[in-house]
Length: 437
Image (cartoon, rainbow, N blue to C red; front, side, top):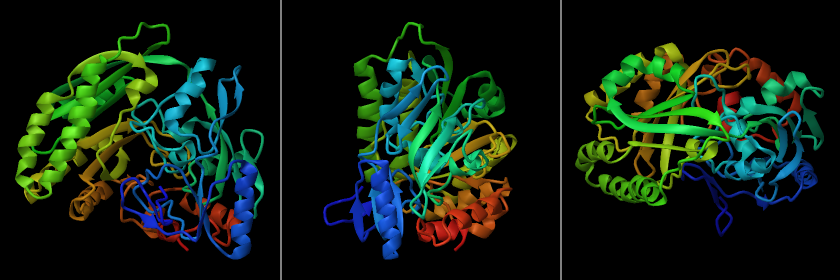
């Protein structure tokens, strides 16, 4: 976020900028005025949410618009289960806003610090082979275009643009309102348990389809997968949440406090990483509980890191994962962060990583003070061989020519950008790299 002295930086400390000025509008009309003023001055303008993208997608060298004041519910359509939210609303606030109406978001990612517009615009997703990313829950939105006009896109207004606008990379306008299709509030029964990695890989597709939500983590230098599976239950189901003390030990003391110290120490003494990873899989990942959907799907992560994630066709998951395993072994790297594997259903959004295909996601991480380039670059080459598409908010090296080959509607999206923002009022260097000038 913006620091004293006017410098903005993202959460992962992988992108920063000193904008010409920062604006904090309190209304959609305030955003409109900011866009018109920037365009009149020949400045670019970009909105930022919580800064949880690791790429430079939100970097604003001209006018930076912070949407922190643009939060909350605009309207509720209880009959259809739809809720319209202001664009800066943080994901972690939404469950409490929906609860009085007996509603919940259909699915969530494992981090909920992002704004709703940042999450949908970069393709944030959770896990579950029957569920799409957060953007697939959107039924309408309003944005301020480059000429300062309000553009409503929904089932009755400019519907042909919805597949592009809900996952727009911040390139088409500033989204000020989002209408979500919600579901009746529900409970999740969660089982977190370690399992032999070889067994998980042999049965991963069955595990993904037999459970409502399934994912696993693998700490390099171990032969164990930490599996997480969840079953959706009616809201009336009795809750059996994690005991507060046990949850604090698992999520605050071990997963964040001690882990932060180990990651920092490993920068000077890499040899401690393999034995710590082996210890970590023995100390964590074995618990069962039942709680509200958002309490199960999301978790607190305070250890700062950098991440690359690729979506590949689900049928290639095991082959790609085994190549990644072999890569780490062959290179002799000490990798302190786990590899994460998740799933998502095919969708029809133009720039979605799951567009047109059921997808598996493989995410790799490094501690924020470590240089991730050698590791990430090598893993990226594996993912590309399997038709991988990079998560828009996470680190990757691809440019417009390479991405065009991976998205059937890439040129349609660029043409829409040319129409809505011909002067690149919402542009920056990162968008120029991934979409072209």
